[in-house]
Length: 640
Ligand code: ADP
Ligand code: ZN
Image 1 (tube, rainbow, N blue to C red):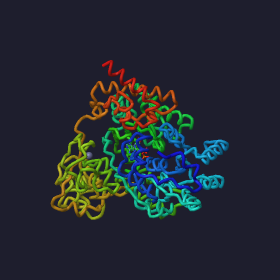
Image 2: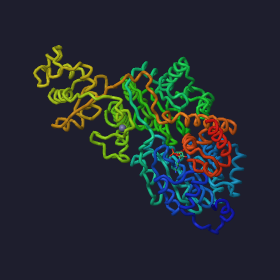
Image 3: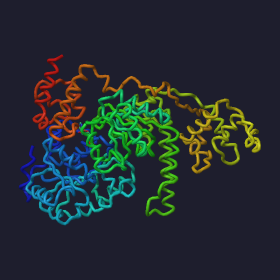
Image 4: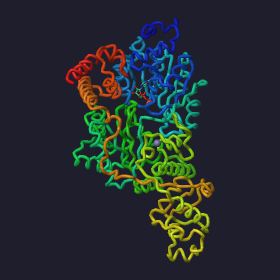
């Protein structure tokens, strides 16, 4: 390794350019990973070759390695621009625990501390420095950057530069000017989890990236199991309590749409004997911080929260995320659910929904406060977009197809690993979602659907679901007869009960065959797939829960099917990790990930060399924690 010596010679003498071998060596030495993941490799290669890069990767894909490794092996100091000021301390602590000289510069430090950090940086004390975007405008900071060689600027959460994204930060617009003001233009790496084409173009243009190497990593998260269950509010609580009881030692988040739900669910869980932390914007800052700390430090296993919780939470061993209500878009859902299983271990994402959730979401869109500064036209555009996103979310709840392919299709991915294009009603599934696993049975509603389609086609004008149900079921209601609808071909061709007919119409709406208008009197109209559905081979299935899902099911996540002795060891190692973490004032996941602990159970290392084989164990981790863990494993082997 050649990190360390180069800072003194920033004036001119160039160290030999680092290679991919150097990068891999650093990955192993500091982080204990044997190799880069695919997307990471391309970005690191690009940066080492002196090019700019833009990486689009979902949460958990490993964005930080894309700049931390180049930062370590390139001579000089790498700057990381990040909006997550509250997270910088954690990120730097994790770096230091891995043996990397990191630092951060933000407003949580006193002016004196800031001066010290810059002074030490000029002396070559650090390889990686996190800064908030506002800092780049500070003349003192600009002067500082002229005194240190800066080979790399990484822009984390790069979508914040785009006004088309949700988290626009005006200060991000200044990054380009900052980079151009530097005496020597560094390589620039931009990273984001937001995939849309428009945002990507913005990032490239507004940061002034120079012919960047672009990689878009697959959005699939194979270790996440997706599940959807339609339950009434009371049943939802039972289900949540049952789930928690089945997974007593696992960390999980329960997301609610409203603060009041957070309070209610947490209070209800307490009555069931489950201690849960709470988090929502109505609590004062100190209480929120304390809740977050207890969850991150594994002092409490369950967090009940609104979506205010999670942005910038890096806890890698969240084993499940349960949604107590339906989020307003697939984007929001995938982001929240994606906080499970960042360490790559099997984890579960369960969405519980009811009709009431849909009504609530619709209400929020219609009554929603119009964003300031939007014209009437822009506001109604935004509202239409929100409605479309909500419809897609409803479709996810109702679909009988593979949930994973539904999500990936939504994000514009046509297929995922090993499975052919699932766009046209998948026959094969991912094998890891509630639909593919057959937790539901399909009932064929093709005949009902055909009758409803004919009804929409033949009725003069548009009517609501109830009217259509009446017509196809042959009702003698006045409004049917007065309109002469008893003369339509579809009249009285369906025997099913009215609720099933209405549900079928909703399902048709979810699949785009019909569209249900908004407003106080929603009517059913032709949807984009209307003509297609009139063709010969059309069929439609509706899913119904097979079993009584409200009662606790036998646990079946890989985490709990482990052989009993191994999981005994896992619990011992977990307890050891917690003791060490508390002792050092670090969150447990930062000492070792769950994945690393599991790997120890599988490998049962007996000495330093074997301990280094464990995923996530680098030299520093071995030095710091090796002896304690090896002793625990040896004791376990003796006891057995
Ligand atoms: P992101 O910022 O994209 O959400 P992180 O950088 O937090 O992702 O990384 C997610 C997890 O993957 C972390 O636990 C990290 O240590 C792990 N990880 C990253 N790169 C690798 C790799 N090459 N091999 C194994 N694990 C990795
Ligand atoms: Zn599936």
